[in-house]
Image (cartoon, rainbow, N blue to C red):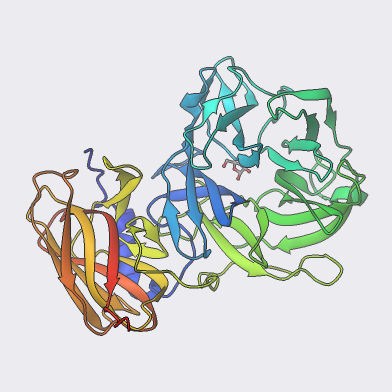
Length: 457
Ligand code: FUB
C-alpha cells in the first residue's frame, strides 16, 4: 500500500481546529479538497460526484473525479475515483466540472477535459454502476465549439428528450439522442440577453451576469438554469423558463459571494421530500480558490417556485432518519473526521488509512435502539496497531467500549477484532477515536455493532 504523507499543514490545521469544528458537518468531505458538486438521486441514494483539487494547487490542478453516496445526506460513503481524465485517450488533463445521469440502467458522465490537440471539449463516459468505473463512450469528444467548452449539465425531460447545456463565456446546448452519446441538430448558442441573464456592468466583454457552471433541471413544469454569475468573486444566480430551450427570465441571486473561493458551482436536487443546494467554497484549512470544498444547505422553495437566499454555513443540514449500527458500515462512511485519509482497499471499495493518535471519525445519528452488546471492526496494521475507542456525542464523550488492534502483518492484511460494549442505547453521534503510539496505527475497512440479545418468547 502506498502511504500518503498526511502530516501536512492541512492535517495539522484540521487537528488544531478540531475542537471548534467537531460540531460542523460542512464541508461534506474533509479527506481531500473537492469542487464542482454534481448530485444525482438514484434508487433511494444520493450520489455526489465532485471534482478534486490536488493538495497545494495554485491553479485548477484536477486529475480525477470523485464519487460519494448517502441515504441520509449527513453520513457520506467515499466510493473513490470513478473516472479520470486519463480515461479519455484524447485528453491531457483538467478534470473540471461534470455531471452524471442514469438512463436505461446505465450511467452517463459528461465532463470537460483539455484535449491533447489543445482546447477543452466535452467527453462522455459510461458505466453500469453509479460508482463506476466509467469508460470513454466514444473514443473522441462528444461536443466541441472551440470556445469555452466546460461545465456540462444534463437533464432528461418527461418526453424523453435529453438536453446537454455547457459553456463559459457562452451558454450552449444540444439535444442528445436516446443513446445519450450522440446528438441531433446543431450546437445552439443561447442568446445571453439581459432579460434572461441580468445586467453586468464594467465588463466590456460580457453584458450579462452568466459566467459558467450551469445546472439545468425542471421542477413543477418550470425549467431552471442555475449558474455561477458575476465574475470574480462569483455568486450563484438563476433564470427560469417555461421551455427547456428558453427564452430565459433572470430571477436573481441565490447564494451571494462568500468564503475563500472566488468560484462557486451549484447543484440542486430534491431528495426524500427535501430540497438541497450543493456548492463549493474554501472552508477547509488551507482552502482557497484552487483548494475548494463541497458543502450542502437544505432549503425550501418559495410558493411560486422561486429560490430563497441561501448562505454558506459550517453547521450543514439535519440528517434523514438514522444510521443502523447493526449492519456492516464502511469505515469510509463519514459525517466529519479529523486526520485520516481513504484509499482503495484490497477487499473491495475503500478503507480508512493514515490513522494517527487522536484521529477520529464522526458518524451522525446512530440508532442503538435498546442497546449494543459488542462491536466488530475489520482492521489491518503493519505497525504496533492501537485502539478504536468508541465515544458518544463527541470525541471525548461517554466511552462505550475500546477495541485493541495488533499488527496483522500488513496494511492490507485484514482481520476482524471484537470488543464488548456498555452504555450504548438510543440515538447518538458515534465517534470512532483512534489512539496509540506515534505514526500510522492501523487501517479500518468496516465496522458493525451487535445488539443485546432480546428474549424471544
Ligand atoms: O473546477 C474548475 C472550474 O472552476 C469549473 O469548471 C468551473 O465551474 C469553476 O468551478
